[in-house]
Length: 335
Image (cartoon, rainbow, N blue to C red; front, side):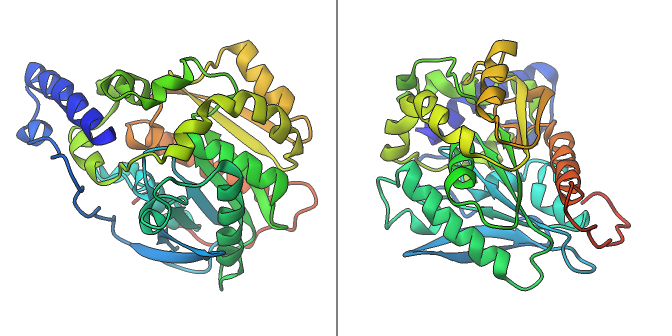
């Protein structure tokens, strides 16, 4: 479904590129149907596998070039994507992994259960509760590794926001610093069955094409993946489930809503509903991201958004009752 969606979006992008006289790279051939090519990775990023109970999850990892990490950021992708979502290849400014390493953090982007290395073993995917248990086991493995830093922040996009909330509520590790969630509310702005459709959802996922670097939809062919049936089937239940899960979250939370977010309702009343359900969280920060669509980390707004993520990690590290984090000199704040 998503490969076809990207092909359709590419055709729109090509029309925009021709109209604006953009480069040949912007109108290169669209991705082909079938198995996508192997995803490239940015300099300093490596592929890893992590034990998650009975599963082996794949992912990407980056580490600071000088000194031990200040903390561990575990990034979880949305439905129909993969870990490569956080290592965007259309422009050097997009990669969360390279930016985090330069700022002194270990960053791990995981392929969630049913994606990447576990896709063949789990063709229908896993329920939300099963994913939370699996990812919690993987996070424990990652946090116990040498040089993991002063705690763990979970960064989650879209469907993975639900997973992060459940993990924090029911499987929170002792060193969980907080949650940073984008593209996930409690009230859908579209009928749940629309997630099963192809071309009709591309504007919900992307928003205006001008929000993305040229070549985005060519590069995105390597990060999309089929959304497992169990994830698709669970979409409509989230408003009810969130009322049960969110009150159990007891760590700081940052919520980001893109200007052109179309999947979730995010007016003042809708955001107040999310914040109200997070009553046990010691702090809830709500951020608005101008010039961004649902897939924030693949657009021009990615660098601003990612910098705000790491600013939130710093705030969590220095929160009440936590020892001061050791300082790692940073000489280059960009990739």
